[in-house]
Length: 151
Image (cartoon, rainbow, N blue to C red; front, top):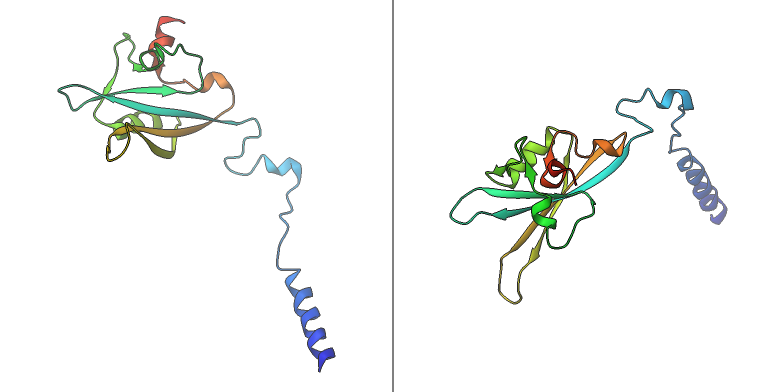
């Protein structure tokens, strides 16, 4: 009886070993897979917003790892139009919809609470990502105040 059980266990184990299939794609064919770009790099950005006093609009800042001064980091990384005027969005969703035009995709959101205890206020940050061929494509389609000033 022990020999039959052992034989069945070995047989089942051998059959399960063939359950995984190896994808057999030659290196020349990999580039033909839809959406595959071997030169692409994934870059990330962090969106934060500042609510306007006596307004329903928000000003959005974007941090994609650029160097900034701690005094001016929020204002210098705000999105601006062609004239250098800060773009005011209806909400963070409005800003996200704006940035998706340029290839950015939503990854995650989190809140950094202000104060302690029962205070429920805080700053919401949204993490976005984009696949680029070259790092110059990070800000393609939009401008920050710092870029507009040429710094």
